[in-house]
Image (cartoon, rainbow, N blue to C red; front, side, top):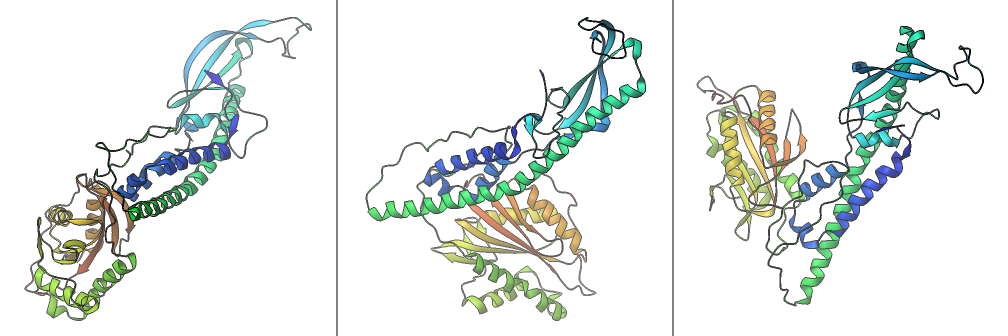
Length: 425
């Protein structure tokens, strides 16, 4: 169906309504669901629901989709000798001009903040093209004027799309923070309410089945599914503060200077011996709470801090031997029991003299993992930080920081061969 575009409502009110509906759904979430869900997955899900794909009009790729004969009323053509009140019909040609586009097709109806008061040409909107119809009398066809008319119409549409894209970009830049704030407020409210109910000391009979939630009305199909959570009752768990986590990372990071100043001492050491040096540094700050070679149900880790016999901080120390071995180290790290909020580190020792390439391979491997939910930081010349959620442990976030340490190489050292140069998603 044909219509005149950019004529319904305006971007400010439309986009505010989209964000408002999603915010209302966040406010209506069950408290226990919010407390048990991964905050990163919740952010990804709801930010995706308010993010809008802008229109992109490929105005240089238009083509004639259809050509047919038609009757044209020339009664108002002052160049023709037509008496007032008389209707004059001549034979003409109709051209359907198709122009490819990308983005949300509903945007063709919304008026941008900057628009032409003279309006826009009538169009038909399809999934990936719009169609403009041009008709002209056969007895006065002019290729130059016809081409100019087509270009004028497409240019006016392209200009409107440009203004609309600016509005969409502004929305996409500001909406995520609104969603994060709404989720933070909801989580704080849920924590407060749960604390009040727990203080009553009254037994609660739980539902046999977990609560279900109605998906929000979306302006498009979402590729991100709503986060799953565990079915058991939510209980507050120990959390390693962000400040302490950063301090631990900084203590370990300072080891690069120790290694650099003592190349002879580190050139022949294996992972266990190097690990001992890191333990000495950590125990100097944390009074021996970091323990080496501690076993749990999935095996042993290299450096960890435990609370109530469960790991709250875990670090793995591995030489770089390629993507396959790096993936195995990640599997090992993810295999350990953890609290809901577990902070980890993956320390990689490099003897290849190609730090930039190794960091990129590490990053590609981390982001290709199915557990990867968010890249918090990626420094091509330093640390990287990621948030993982395991399929078998929904709602529990694992924060992993990767650190690369260049190790000295002596004449007798053998550089480990890279077992893989590609990452499979």
